[in-house]
Length: 395
Figure 1 (cartoon, one colour):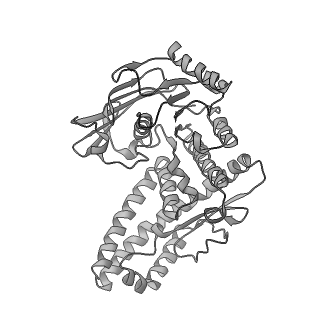
Figure 2 (cartoon, rainbow, N blue to C red):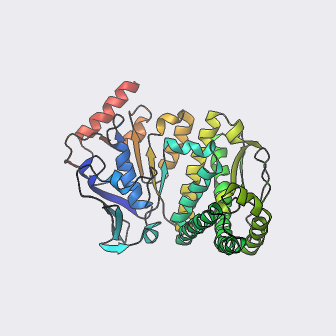
Figure 3 (cartoon, one colour):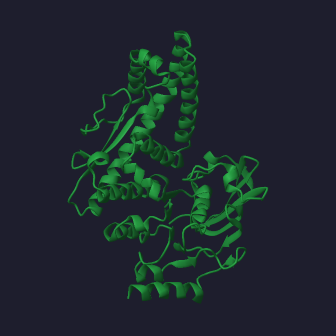
């Protein structure tokens, strides 16, 4: 299993003055009503592992109202290592520590990687390519510091070029901006397209299992310089770096007038197209709700498989209020992954979604906690009573 979280401690984070979770095991379920603080716990875990939040908050939003700062700590262990991960937030800035030593976020991504699945992730199957690009880049940033750095460098170069286009700068300045964009952007496209190809392969395998082999999932990545028809699946192998630079440079020259008219860049990895197809039909347009949920579930399972394969480390799985979004068959597919030795944290409004066997192996905690500052402990008769009541409702 590799590194696993053994303890969490939050101070002045979101609605928690002080929260400590000791004795963490393979499966923890937080159950309680909406707005009780369940998602805040999952968000804190993601901040400590993936070094980002699916909510994309500001620092001030994460610090408890009236408090000067917030602090998150996680302890992780495997057979040979004991690590303490820390995130401190105050006055609009974030500081990260590993065993008490200051680190950059890029240094910590991938140490204890995580995969989060939230209801908003259903947009992966029904929204524009930008959502898919962001998801692939978020995965790439955990797998490689180079991927994260390239994405940041490209976004900086893109902002600079867009300012020039808005200001109607002369061609000489745009030529210089394009050359920077090509050097960084072509490499980002290569990184992302290669990662997406591996992800698509793993997704197809997971989707086939979820759909019982009755449907076939395929995916395509079309760089911005390739003609794009969302209605037709057209495989496009990841380009080489030299090919990407040449094609991107030619496309920028050919579409200069269009970019000037729009006052924004239209060529580069920010405009690449990612599409999913089920039996040859674009899932965003033709997929049923069930097919789209299966697609997103396959995406998340593929993420966990790639992280384990590329980092030799099982990720922490964070499932925030998604059990109600899935039917029994898809929940079973997700729980099969949980049973495959992934340390998992789940939030739910009730326990009716879980079978007795899974709950017997889980630590179930009621949120909100009885006392805001109480320290939680290994599963007790109180937690067992929660499970028993859920079993009684199902009987």
